[in-house]
Image 1: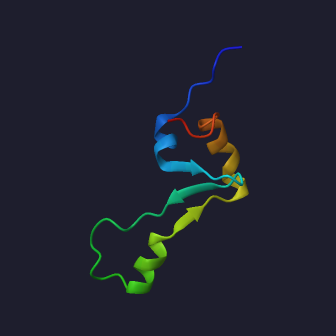
Image 2: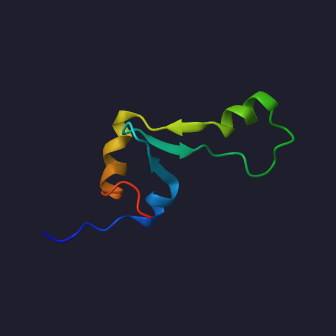
Amino acid sequence: MPKVKTRKAALKRFKLTATGKIRFKKCGLRHILTKKSADRKRKKGLAGYLTSADTGRIMRAIPYGTDS
């Protein structure tokens, strides 16, 4: 059976953790930061984790976990 191609856009945006969760970076921390509160910016700096409803779509996009 042939290999399944990895979607490179998904590979750049998501990482698979050792426990099988999918981690991503939250949006909204690039510019226009002066009007955002420190608490809001601090929470944006933490990693986000996908819900189980979205996990299947991303696992199909990155079938081999993380490529080097």
